[in-house]
Length: 316
Image (cartoon, rainbow, N blue to C red; front, side):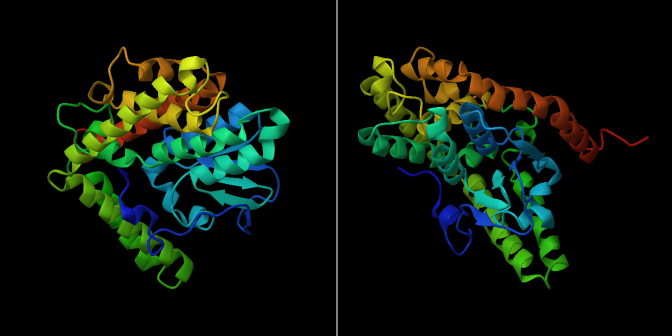
């Protein structure tokens, strides 16, 4: 069962991803990543860059401050999401797209992500299954019996997190109504966010999403038992691959959200796989260290904003 709803890939709502496209607004030289420390897809791309040993320049896009909707960023990525990769003035968007480009361009020289021809389809399959999980709903939706970590727990259930974005985008649509490029991007993003909110607050939807996710994790467990991992390899191939990059971030996120007890057993092969994934040096530098930055620098700002909104904090 595919978890992400159809509208996520509807061409009427979501622009096609860019692949190595020239962009007058992009930095002309160097490798640049526009990302957010705690973003799941940013984690995947950062680990890919670290695994490849590719030097890159960081451009944090602070999602709590809604910087993904700033005109300067939207001119790079009309989807209003992170991450965005720029190489010498050429833009690539969409996580799978970015990782495929990086692997093709830098993998052979660094002997990374080398899989046999017979393993290629399996790698693509498991990349797609990880990308198909409805992680946004699992992150911000209200899951019965699960207490989400701060600040996620304060944003679940009511749809307030998404409603704030809808209101901001409505304002931006009015502000930039004479700019067809920006107006179109904001209108499409508003429609996607409204639909996402509906998927999370509609009665019965979240239990169905959790159940479908559990089925996907059961399929993952079966693959680990029967595939290369049980013989010293990885998920879909003997060598560490882009499929493992995808599942590294996903399993880390599900554990952080407190969802692991609902989805797999502590003593299952998934736990063994997750432990091996997080032991990778590229995971430490691309995911863990940046997560610490997010929690130490960004989350206190969110806490202040939440307390102020509740009337429990005043400016002095």
